[in-house]
Length: 341
Image (cartoon, rainbow, N blue to C red):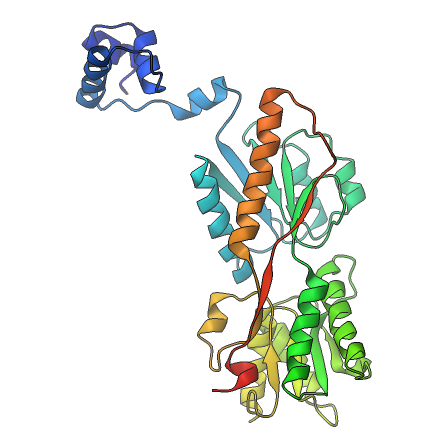
């Protein structure tokens, strides 16, 4: 049988309440009594029931993170950072994968797990602001990504239009004029694609370069194979592009694979830039130029917003203002795929 708090109290010769005070770090315990209790805890190898303690306080110590795809490196890297930030608060993170499906996202926000979690961080693809506004579950929630702006919950995002404009401007600055884009989407969930396409078009317009729709390749997903297929299609255009802005790094890595197979040199024949700054791009050949969202800041902001909501809830305080929309920083990271070796 596991050692109980009463077992510790009996060995130390104190009350169960005194043992509880020592375990919970209360200061009003005499030093000699605290020492006796701590020696009894060590002798019996007592471990407090943290789950029971959290539940008594109205908390589980668990938050949930729901993202579309765990095998997308951006989400995997962000999840790692969120887990590390949550650990600073003593929280455990329950990770869920929605695959961007409306039913799965609805299930995540519906409160079916409200007895398990204290808060939720969600990166939605299918749900709209209107869907989330109909949510009745009171569990604190923070949104990530571009799908929902000015919605019913706190939101952490980067300026995708400005970032895409900077990526395209970098290609213009190195002398490229026939600049393609890979990653446009016409599906309702493609808000990221729409914002990045807008930034691409704004950079072209500012440079006096006509927008050419045939240089914009659509993709259903943002995987390597989608980038490879889109690049193959773009190379059949005459004349082919001399640069390509890919809406994420996986698309760019797939595009560079096709270029290598076709005997095209990067960046001499076709310069390539991606988006997300995943670790794989730092070790590709050539290394991948990219837009680097400040993922540590995104994680810190999301956890901080969630913590504030939870603190207000414990104190019974109403939110002083509406949901916050906070923009995290990003940087342009030029590497070999645009600058050469």
